[in-house]
Length: 140
Image (cartoon, rainbow, N blue to C red; front, side):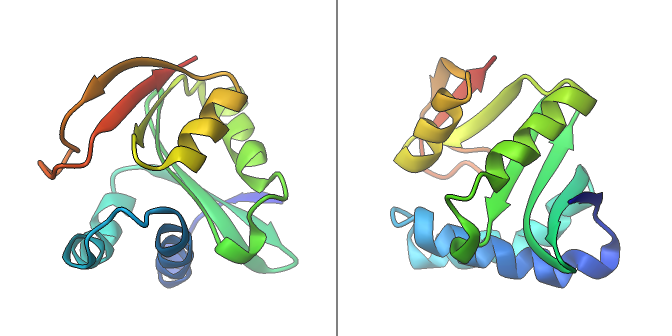
């Protein structure tokens, strides 16, 4: 079930983020992983958050701002079960999301978004924090 995220869910979101990123972002330097982990709660305040709840346990979430999908993270143990697609489809159907930025080095994510219909529009050499992680700007 997809539900709105509450502030009391934030600690669980951080655990989901950590599980997802540690298993998909092997290109991140340890200090950058720690930097993003420290700052991710600040981003929660600037997006609409929705989570996938499986019998009372959050196992994935999205963050939406305007027509942008700002974040999608699925707990590593729940990957490959269609949860990401359900969350993105929810965002498309209810919030008209049509854009997403993806780390170029996260080949699994690039493949996922391509599979569900996103196309690469352009590329940036650095991420939004000015770090040397190229970003692909994708759209429907």
